[in-house]
Amino acid sequence: MNENNSVLTNTMTTLLEGKKYTTLRDILVTMNAADIAVLFESMPEEKLPLLFRLLPKELAADTFVEMEADSQEMLIKGFSDAELKEVVDELYVDDAVDIVEEMPANVVRRILRQADPEMRKMINEILNYPEDSAGSIMTTEYVSLRPAMTVSEAIKHIRRTGVDKETIYTCYVATNRMLIGTISLKTLLLSDEDDVIRDIMEQNPIYVTTTDDQELVAQTLSKYDFIAVPVVDQEGRLVGIVTVDDAMDVIEEEATEDIEKMNAIMPTDKKYLQTTPFELWKARIPWLLILMISATITEHIIGRYEQALSAVVALTAFIPMLMDTGGNAGGQASVTIIRGLSLNEIQPRDVLKVLWKEIRVGVMCAVTLGVATMLKITLLERVEFKIAMVVGLTLSCTIVLAKTVGCTLPLAAKRVGLDPAVMSSPFITTIVDALSLVIYFTFATVLLGL
Image 1: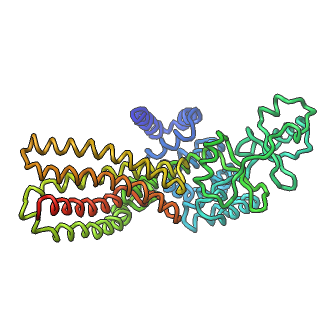
Image 2 (image 1 turned 90 degrees about the vertical axis):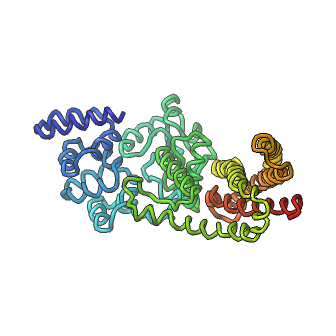
Image 3 (image 1 turned 90 degrees about the horizontal axis):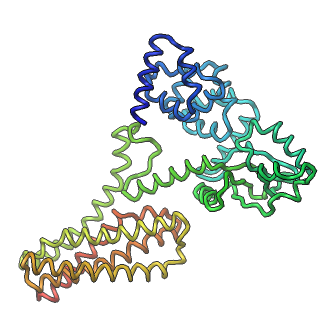
């Protein structure tokens, strides 16, 4: 794919230099908007306005939506008011909102000036909803039908208004804006023309509210295999829909955020190559400082038992292995639980079930690794059996403890309203490291008489 893009980029550049604009346009109109956006990102910035103007109006708007915010801003600044209005008029409301949220204030003002009054009103309404809520990602462009309509009337209504809607495959039935049902285009096409909508619609529709978290919206679409889910306000009035393409963006955004948190990085909206070193430093340094400070606990523990370590130097060699294994065991449990919480497979109320399962897993892992470690140390490294027993017992207890900590902390975070991803591997590893050292030196003191 990258090789194809490189060839296409070279072809475009050659055609541009030769001023073969008709040939360029003929190639571009055969491409998907997302592919054109990727192609445009690889072209010199000064050529973008010219390339963009070669696109037909509708394809230009679709391509604009797919482009990166920096490129969008650069194009907007180069647009005349008439050109900007053409693009804005072709945008769906949710796409226009996404663009507005990424732009500086002076660019936003230009966009809103060129939007028609109805579009401007809808954009402002959506911008007033809480960030990352269903209301903030919905579109107000949906097909609404009245329950008393016949199928024939409904189809005429869709033909007349559907061209401007985000989707026509699912229609929403409302009385005085109150959502009472849904009906698919397939049902309409396969029903008799005289059938009344209220008789053939799906009653008790699944919906989300404007204040619901966007992650819940994505989960709802996934659970029920919807193309779109209706959004109602606190009074039950239909105010918009969230389509599956927006839900996919949410899933990607939430997954990226969780991965960043689980690796002790503050979340950022920018792509890696568009992020400056200073911004990366700001995203990484807070957690590194926190983890460094918390790691001083292990330093104090080792310092407290310095005399024991000097008496039995062999104990020192096994500290990294014990800490790493404990951290890995805790990380396995935490990642499993965080994923389960994200997919709604696990709830905080399941803490006892989760704990009991992880303890059993921990015991089985502990016996396996404990015995294997003792045999390895005794037979291959020729270490005294008492020391091997200290290491084996410590490792076994550490693994059970790590599994326990790794599964309970994300559940506790969820219970108090925090993001479970915060209780990630680096955080859990720091806790388990300290506990494993306490266990290690306790066993050493008792069994070796230190």
